[in-house]
Image (cartoon, rainbow, N blue to C red; front, side, top):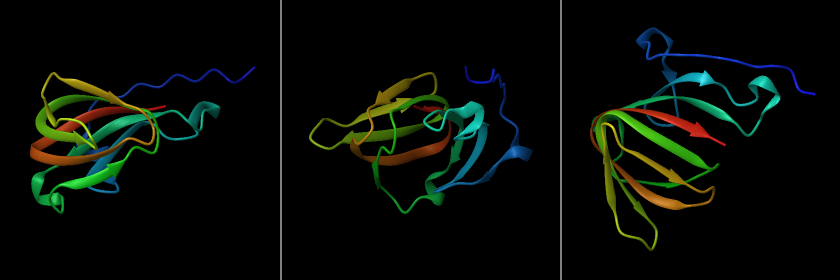
Length: 112
C-alpha cells in the first residue's frame, strides 16, 4: 500500500520558480506521494515570455483550467480553439499542438 499523500495550494507569487517557459508554482511535484506520473501546479506566462507560437508535444496526459488570461491551442490536424478565464481543455500524452499565449495567463494544470 502506498503512503497517504495530501497536498493543497493556492496562487502565491513567492512560490514561483522558473519553468520550461514562464514560471511554475507546484502543488504536487512529479514523484511526490510515490506517483511519478502525477503532478499539478500553476503556470504563469505572458506573451513576452514566449518565442511566439510554440509547438508543444504533451509529455503526459494534461488537463488545464485557465484562471486568468487567454491562450490559443491548435492541435496538429485539428481546428484551433481558444481557452480563456473559466475555460478548460484536456489532451492525451503525445498530442502535438501549437500554443500561442494571447494575454498574460495563469493556468492550473494536472499531468497524469
